[in-house]
Length: 404
Image (cartoon, rainbow, N blue to C red):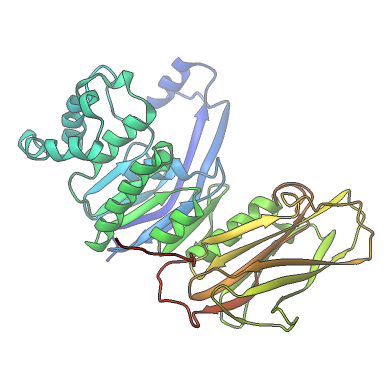
Protein backbone atom coordinates (compact mmCIF):
# COMPACT_ATOMS: atom_id res chain seq x y z
CA UNK A 1 0.00 0.00 0.00
CA UNK A 2 1.32 3.45 -0.91
CA UNK A 3 1.61 6.15 1.75
CA UNK A 4 1.05 8.88 -0.82
CA UNK A 5 -0.71 8.77 -4.19
CA UNK A 6 -1.30 11.63 -6.62
CA UNK A 7 -3.98 10.76 -9.18
CA UNK A 8 -4.27 12.84 -12.37
CA UNK A 9 -3.48 16.17 -10.70
CA UNK A 10 -4.34 19.27 -12.72
CA UNK A 11 -3.96 22.84 -11.50
CA UNK A 12 -4.93 26.03 -13.32
CA UNK A 13 -4.71 29.63 -12.12
CA UNK A 14 -7.24 32.14 -13.47
CA UNK A 15 -6.89 35.90 -13.92
CA UNK A 16 -9.96 38.15 -13.73
CA UNK A 17 -10.48 41.72 -14.83
CA UNK A 18 -11.01 42.75 -11.20
CA UNK A 19 -11.02 41.31 -7.72
CA UNK A 20 -14.77 41.57 -7.26
CA UNK A 21 -15.36 39.59 -10.46
CA UNK A 22 -13.19 36.81 -9.08
CA UNK A 23 -15.20 36.77 -5.84
CA UNK A 24 -18.48 36.90 -7.78
CA UNK A 25 -17.43 33.86 -9.82
CA UNK A 26 -17.13 31.88 -6.57
CA UNK A 27 -20.88 32.33 -6.11
CA UNK A 28 -21.74 31.17 -9.60
CA UNK A 29 -22.07 34.53 -11.34
CA UNK A 30 -21.13 34.28 -15.04
CA UNK A 31 -17.81 36.14 -15.00
CA UNK A 32 -15.19 34.41 -17.08
CA UNK A 33 -11.48 34.75 -16.39
CA UNK A 34 -9.41 36.95 -18.68
CA UNK A 35 -6.77 34.23 -18.92
CA UNK A 36 -5.89 30.84 -17.47
CA UNK A 37 -2.49 29.33 -16.78
CA UNK A 38 -2.29 25.55 -16.52
CA UNK A 39 0.57 24.70 -14.18
CA UNK A 40 0.00 20.96 -13.69
CA UNK A 41 -1.42 18.67 -16.35
CA UNK A 42 -2.27 15.13 -15.29
CA UNK A 43 0.49 14.37 -12.75
CA UNK A 44 0.24 10.90 -11.26
CA UNK A 45 2.66 8.95 -9.05
CA UNK A 46 2.77 7.02 -5.78
CA UNK A 47 5.25 6.83 -2.91
CA UNK A 48 5.57 3.63 -0.92
CA UNK A 49 6.66 3.10 2.70
CA UNK A 50 10.34 3.96 3.19
CA UNK A 51 10.72 5.16 -0.41
CA UNK A 52 12.70 8.33 -1.13
CA UNK A 53 11.58 10.24 -4.22
CA UNK A 54 13.27 13.32 -5.67
CA UNK A 55 11.33 15.78 -7.82
CA UNK A 56 13.38 17.78 -10.30
CA UNK A 57 12.63 20.18 -13.12
CA UNK A 58 13.36 23.65 -14.39
CA UNK A 59 11.81 26.73 -12.79
CA UNK A 60 8.12 26.86 -13.66
CA UNK A 61 7.80 23.12 -14.15
CA UNK A 62 5.19 22.90 -11.35
CA UNK A 63 7.27 21.38 -8.53
CA UNK A 64 6.32 23.76 -5.72
CA UNK A 65 2.67 23.86 -6.81
CA UNK A 66 2.56 20.06 -6.66
CA UNK A 67 3.99 20.02 -3.12
CA UNK A 68 1.47 22.61 -1.96
CA UNK A 69 -1.36 20.46 -3.31
CA UNK A 70 0.04 17.39 -1.58
CA UNK A 71 0.27 19.25 1.75
CA UNK A 72 -3.21 20.71 1.36
CA UNK A 73 -2.28 24.40 1.06
CA UNK A 74 -3.61 24.42 -2.52
CA UNK A 75 -6.63 22.62 -3.98
CA UNK A 76 -6.22 20.88 -7.36
CA UNK A 77 -8.42 21.94 -10.25
CA UNK A 78 -8.91 18.26 -11.02
CA UNK A 79 -7.64 15.01 -9.56
CA UNK A 80 -6.95 14.04 -5.96
CA UNK A 81 -4.21 13.24 -3.48
CA UNK A 82 -4.48 10.34 -1.04
CA UNK A 83 -2.24 10.35 2.04
CA UNK A 84 -1.96 7.49 4.54
CA UNK A 85 0.11 8.76 7.45
CA UNK A 86 1.34 11.93 9.12
CA UNK A 87 3.07 14.43 6.84
CA UNK A 88 5.71 16.99 7.81
CA UNK A 89 6.62 19.58 5.22
CA UNK A 90 9.24 22.30 4.84
CA UNK A 91 8.18 24.37 1.87
CA UNK A 92 8.60 28.11 1.34
CA UNK A 93 10.97 29.92 3.67
CA UNK A 94 9.14 31.00 6.84
CA UNK A 95 5.83 29.58 5.61
CA UNK A 96 3.36 29.60 8.51
CA UNK A 97 5.57 31.72 10.79
CA UNK A 98 4.24 34.91 12.36
CA UNK A 99 7.05 37.48 12.04
CA UNK A 100 5.99 39.26 15.24
CA UNK A 101 6.21 36.11 17.36
CA UNK A 102 9.47 34.69 18.67
CA UNK A 103 10.98 31.48 17.38
CA UNK A 104 9.79 29.69 20.52
CA UNK A 105 6.23 30.99 20.12
CA UNK A 106 6.22 30.06 16.45
CA UNK A 107 7.26 26.51 17.36
CA UNK A 108 4.13 26.14 19.51
CA UNK A 109 2.00 27.70 16.78
CA UNK A 110 3.45 25.52 13.99
CA UNK A 111 3.22 22.35 16.07
CA UNK A 112 -0.46 23.03 16.83
CA UNK A 113 -1.12 23.30 13.09
CA UNK A 114 0.62 19.93 12.71
CA UNK A 115 -1.88 18.44 15.20
CA UNK A 116 0.26 18.37 18.35
CA UNK A 117 -0.97 19.54 21.74
CA UNK A 118 0.87 21.91 24.05
CA UNK A 119 2.08 19.12 26.33
CA UNK A 120 3.70 17.42 23.30
CA UNK A 121 5.60 20.61 22.48
CA UNK A 122 6.54 21.14 26.15
CA UNK A 123 8.31 17.78 26.06
CA UNK A 124 10.06 18.51 22.75
CA UNK A 125 10.85 22.23 22.99
CA UNK A 126 14.31 21.80 24.52
CA UNK A 127 15.35 19.37 21.78
CA UNK A 128 13.95 21.73 19.12
CA UNK A 129 15.88 24.68 20.56
CA UNK A 130 19.05 22.60 20.79
CA UNK A 131 18.75 21.32 17.21
CA UNK A 132 18.12 24.80 15.77
CA UNK A 133 21.22 26.19 17.51
CA UNK A 134 20.33 29.89 17.26
CA UNK A 135 21.02 30.71 20.90
CA UNK A 136 19.25 33.71 22.45
CA UNK A 137 17.64 34.50 19.07
CA UNK A 138 15.16 31.70 19.79
CA UNK A 139 13.23 34.16 21.97
CA UNK A 140 13.48 37.11 19.56
CA UNK A 141 10.84 38.00 16.91
CA UNK A 142 11.19 36.03 13.68
CA UNK A 143 11.14 39.28 11.69
CA UNK A 144 14.74 39.94 12.80
CA UNK A 145 15.91 36.44 11.74
CA UNK A 146 18.16 35.79 8.79
CA UNK A 147 16.91 33.32 6.18
CA UNK A 148 19.27 30.70 7.58
CA UNK A 149 17.89 31.11 11.10
CA UNK A 150 14.33 30.71 9.82
CA UNK A 151 15.32 27.48 8.09
CA UNK A 152 16.92 26.16 11.27
CA UNK A 153 13.78 26.70 13.34
CA UNK A 154 11.42 25.49 10.59
CA UNK A 155 13.37 22.27 10.06
CA UNK A 156 13.79 21.65 13.79
CA UNK A 157 10.05 21.83 14.49
CA UNK A 158 9.04 19.94 11.32
CA UNK A 159 11.31 17.03 12.26
CA UNK A 160 10.89 17.08 16.04
CA UNK A 161 8.55 14.10 15.67
CA UNK A 162 9.30 11.46 13.04
CA UNK A 163 6.65 11.63 10.32
CA UNK A 164 5.52 8.85 7.99
CA UNK A 165 6.19 11.24 5.07
CA UNK A 166 8.71 14.10 5.07
CA UNK A 167 8.42 16.69 2.29
CA UNK A 168 11.29 19.12 1.72
CA UNK A 169 11.37 21.91 -0.86
CA UNK A 170 14.42 23.99 -1.81
CA UNK A 171 14.30 25.80 1.56
CA UNK A 172 17.32 23.88 2.90
CA UNK A 173 19.51 25.27 0.12
CA UNK A 174 19.64 28.67 1.86
CA UNK A 175 21.00 27.20 5.09
CA UNK A 176 24.68 27.19 5.96
CA UNK A 177 26.84 24.19 5.13
CA UNK A 178 27.02 22.97 8.73
CA UNK A 179 23.23 22.93 9.15
CA UNK A 180 22.73 21.28 5.75
CA UNK A 181 24.94 18.39 6.88
CA UNK A 182 23.06 18.21 10.17
CA UNK A 183 19.68 18.26 8.40
CA UNK A 184 20.58 15.58 5.88
CA UNK A 185 21.89 13.38 8.71
CA UNK A 186 18.47 13.60 10.39
CA UNK A 187 16.73 12.88 7.08
CA UNK A 188 18.87 9.76 6.58
CA UNK A 189 18.11 8.69 10.16
CA UNK A 190 14.37 9.01 9.47
CA UNK A 191 14.77 7.03 6.26
CA UNK A 192 16.45 4.20 8.16
CA UNK A 193 13.47 4.18 10.53
CA UNK A 194 10.99 3.89 7.65
CA UNK A 195 10.02 7.48 6.82
CA UNK A 196 9.18 8.15 3.18
CA UNK A 197 10.85 11.20 1.65
CA UNK A 198 9.68 13.58 -1.06
CA UNK A 199 12.34 16.18 -1.85
CA UNK A 200 12.60 18.96 -4.44
CA UNK A 201 16.16 19.97 -5.22
CA UNK A 202 18.43 21.08 -8.05
CA UNK A 203 21.34 19.41 -6.25
CA UNK A 204 22.21 16.28 -8.23
CA UNK A 205 24.29 14.83 -5.39
CA UNK A 206 21.47 15.26 -2.84
CA UNK A 207 18.95 13.57 -5.13
CA UNK A 208 21.22 10.64 -5.90
CA UNK A 209 22.45 10.12 -2.34
CA UNK A 210 19.07 10.43 -0.60
CA UNK A 211 16.68 9.06 -3.22
CA UNK A 212 16.08 5.67 -4.79
CA UNK A 213 13.78 7.21 -7.40
CA UNK A 214 13.43 10.54 -9.20
CA UNK A 215 10.60 12.25 -11.09
CA UNK A 216 11.29 14.85 -13.77
CA UNK A 217 8.56 17.44 -14.26
CA UNK A 218 8.48 19.51 -17.43
CA UNK A 219 5.65 21.79 -18.47
CA UNK A 220 3.48 20.48 -15.64
CA UNK A 221 3.78 16.85 -16.74
CA UNK A 222 5.82 13.84 -15.65
CA UNK A 223 8.54 13.49 -18.28
CA UNK A 224 10.61 10.79 -16.55
CA UNK A 225 10.09 8.58 -13.48
CA UNK A 226 12.80 6.10 -12.53
CA UNK A 227 16.42 5.62 -11.51
CA UNK A 228 17.84 8.91 -10.09
CA UNK A 229 21.05 8.76 -12.12
CA UNK A 230 19.21 8.20 -15.41
CA UNK A 231 16.61 10.88 -14.64
CA UNK A 232 19.28 13.43 -13.68
CA UNK A 233 21.28 12.63 -16.84
CA UNK A 234 18.17 13.24 -18.92
CA UNK A 235 17.43 16.44 -16.98
CA UNK A 236 20.95 17.80 -17.55
CA UNK A 237 20.73 16.97 -21.25
CA UNK A 238 17.34 18.67 -21.42
CA UNK A 239 18.78 21.83 -19.86
CA UNK A 240 21.65 21.82 -22.35
CA UNK A 241 19.37 21.12 -25.27
CA UNK A 242 16.57 23.54 -24.37
CA UNK A 243 14.52 21.68 -26.98
CA UNK A 244 14.34 17.90 -26.86
CA UNK A 245 14.31 17.37 -30.65
CA UNK A 246 17.87 16.01 -30.68
CA UNK A 247 17.85 14.49 -27.20
CA UNK A 248 18.30 10.73 -27.38
CA UNK A 249 18.25 7.94 -24.81
CA UNK A 250 19.78 4.55 -25.60
CA UNK A 251 20.69 1.58 -23.42
CA UNK A 252 24.20 0.22 -22.97
CA UNK A 253 25.15 -3.45 -22.64
CA UNK A 254 24.69 -3.28 -18.87
CA UNK A 255 21.08 -2.14 -19.32
CA UNK A 256 21.63 1.39 -18.04
CA UNK A 257 20.39 4.37 -20.00
CA UNK A 258 22.85 6.52 -21.93
CA UNK A 259 21.69 10.06 -22.64
CA UNK A 260 23.05 12.28 -25.40
CA UNK A 261 22.00 15.59 -26.89
CA UNK A 262 23.32 18.45 -28.97
CA UNK A 263 23.07 20.36 -32.21
CA UNK A 264 25.81 18.29 -33.89
CA UNK A 265 28.35 20.90 -35.08
CA UNK A 266 31.02 18.73 -33.44
CA UNK A 267 30.98 15.18 -32.10
CA UNK A 268 33.24 12.82 -30.17
CA UNK A 269 34.17 9.99 -32.57
CA UNK A 270 36.51 8.05 -30.29
CA UNK A 271 37.39 7.89 -26.61
CA UNK A 272 39.87 5.72 -24.72
CA UNK A 273 41.90 5.52 -21.53
CA UNK A 274 45.58 4.80 -22.23
CA UNK A 275 48.29 3.73 -19.80
CA UNK A 276 51.85 5.09 -19.74
CA UNK A 277 52.78 2.77 -22.62
CA UNK A 278 49.92 4.04 -24.76
CA UNK A 279 47.85 0.87 -24.40
CA UNK A 280 44.08 0.97 -23.82
CA UNK A 281 43.03 0.04 -20.27
CA UNK A 282 39.64 -0.58 -18.68
CA UNK A 283 40.89 -1.41 -15.19
CA UNK A 284 43.14 1.06 -13.39
CA UNK A 285 45.19 0.86 -10.23
CA UNK A 286 44.58 3.48 -7.56
CA UNK A 287 46.97 6.34 -8.34
CA UNK A 288 47.89 5.06 -11.81
CA UNK A 289 48.82 7.72 -14.36
CA UNK A 290 46.62 7.52 -17.45
CA UNK A 291 45.58 9.65 -20.41
CA UNK A 292 42.03 10.17 -21.59
CA UNK A 293 42.29 10.54 -25.38
CA UNK A 294 39.35 11.79 -27.44
CA UNK A 295 38.93 12.22 -31.18
CA UNK A 296 36.58 15.12 -31.94
CA UNK A 297 35.29 15.73 -35.46
CA UNK A 298 34.12 19.22 -36.43
CA UNK A 299 31.18 18.97 -38.85
CA UNK A 300 30.21 22.63 -39.23
CA UNK A 301 31.95 25.97 -38.85
CA UNK A 302 31.80 27.37 -35.29
CA UNK A 303 33.51 30.30 -33.62
CA UNK A 304 34.99 28.23 -30.81
CA UNK A 305 35.17 24.65 -29.56
CA UNK A 306 35.48 23.63 -25.93
CA UNK A 307 35.86 20.05 -24.69
CA UNK A 308 34.62 19.22 -21.21
CA UNK A 309 34.77 15.97 -19.29
CA UNK A 310 33.74 14.66 -15.89
CA UNK A 311 34.34 11.46 -13.97
CA UNK A 312 31.36 10.07 -12.04
CA UNK A 313 31.09 7.23 -9.55
CA UNK A 314 28.52 4.45 -9.82
CA UNK A 315 25.93 6.64 -8.06
CA UNK A 316 26.34 9.37 -10.66
CA UNK A 317 28.13 11.80 -8.36
CA UNK A 318 30.83 13.87 -10.02
CA UNK A 319 34.30 13.08 -8.68
CA UNK A 320 36.06 15.61 -10.91
CA UNK A 321 35.27 17.69 -13.95
CA UNK A 322 36.78 20.48 -16.00
CA UNK A 323 36.97 21.71 -19.59
CA UNK A 324 39.40 23.25 -22.06
CA UNK A 325 37.94 26.72 -21.44
CA UNK A 326 39.15 26.66 -17.84
CA UNK A 327 42.45 25.08 -18.95
CA UNK A 328 42.98 27.89 -21.50
CA UNK A 329 42.86 25.47 -24.46
CA UNK A 330 39.88 26.79 -26.43
CA UNK A 331 39.98 26.07 -30.19
CA UNK A 332 39.12 29.26 -32.07
CA UNK A 333 37.44 28.76 -35.46
CA UNK A 334 38.23 25.02 -35.74
CA UNK A 335 38.45 23.68 -39.29
CA UNK A 336 35.28 21.90 -40.50
CA UNK A 337 35.92 18.27 -41.39
CA UNK A 338 39.09 18.01 -39.32
CA UNK A 339 39.54 15.44 -36.54
CA UNK A 340 41.11 16.98 -33.42
CA UNK A 341 42.79 14.80 -30.81
CA UNK A 342 42.51 15.86 -27.18
CA UNK A 343 44.68 14.19 -24.52
CA UNK A 344 44.07 14.69 -20.81
CA UNK A 345 46.68 13.22 -18.48
CA UNK A 346 45.93 12.61 -14.78
CA UNK A 347 46.52 10.25 -11.88
CA UNK A 348 43.53 8.11 -10.98
CA UNK A 349 43.56 8.95 -7.27
CA UNK A 350 40.14 7.42 -6.88
CA UNK A 351 38.67 4.88 -4.50
CA UNK A 352 37.94 1.34 -5.61
CA UNK A 353 34.84 0.96 -7.74
CA UNK A 354 33.31 1.59 -11.14
CA UNK A 355 33.32 4.98 -12.86
CA UNK A 356 32.02 6.60 -16.00
CA UNK A 357 33.19 9.50 -18.16
CA UNK A 358 30.85 12.26 -19.34
CA UNK A 359 31.87 14.34 -22.37
CA UNK A 360 30.63 17.72 -23.53
CA UNK A 361 31.38 19.84 -26.60
CA UNK A 362 30.29 23.46 -26.51
CA UNK A 363 31.48 27.02 -27.12
CA UNK A 364 31.95 28.67 -23.72
CA UNK A 365 32.61 28.01 -20.07
CA UNK A 366 29.71 25.53 -19.66
CA UNK A 367 27.75 23.04 -21.75
CA UNK A 368 24.62 25.20 -21.50
CA UNK A 369 26.17 27.63 -24.00
CA UNK A 370 25.85 26.27 -27.57
CA UNK A 371 25.64 22.58 -26.75
CA UNK A 372 27.20 20.77 -29.75
CA UNK A 373 27.20 17.39 -27.99
CA UNK A 374 26.62 16.09 -24.48
CA UNK A 375 27.08 12.40 -23.79
CA UNK A 376 26.68 10.58 -20.49
CA UNK A 377 28.49 7.29 -19.82
CA UNK A 378 30.73 7.79 -22.84
CA UNK A 379 33.33 5.47 -21.26
CA UNK A 380 33.29 3.04 -18.32
CA UNK A 381 36.27 1.90 -16.25
CA UNK A 382 37.12 0.20 -12.96
CA UNK A 383 39.60 1.19 -10.25
CA UNK A 384 41.24 -1.44 -8.02
CA UNK A 385 43.65 -1.14 -5.12
CA UNK A 386 46.93 -2.92 -5.77
CA UNK A 387 49.77 -2.51 -3.28
CA UNK A 388 48.44 0.51 -1.38
CA UNK A 389 47.19 0.56 2.23
CA UNK A 390 43.51 -0.19 2.71
CA UNK A 391 41.41 3.00 2.72
CA UNK A 392 37.79 4.06 2.46
CA UNK A 393 36.15 6.78 0.43
CA UNK A 394 36.08 8.04 -3.12
CA UNK A 395 39.61 9.53 -3.22
CA UNK A 396 43.11 8.33 -2.41
CA UNK A 397 45.09 10.80 -0.29
CA UNK A 398 48.67 9.87 0.46
CA UNK A 399 49.02 10.27 4.21
CA UNK A 400 51.81 10.27 6.77
CA UNK A 401 50.74 9.41 10.30
CA UNK A 402 52.96 10.07 13.31
CA UNK A 403 52.53 9.50 17.04
CA UNK A 404 54.74 10.96 19.77
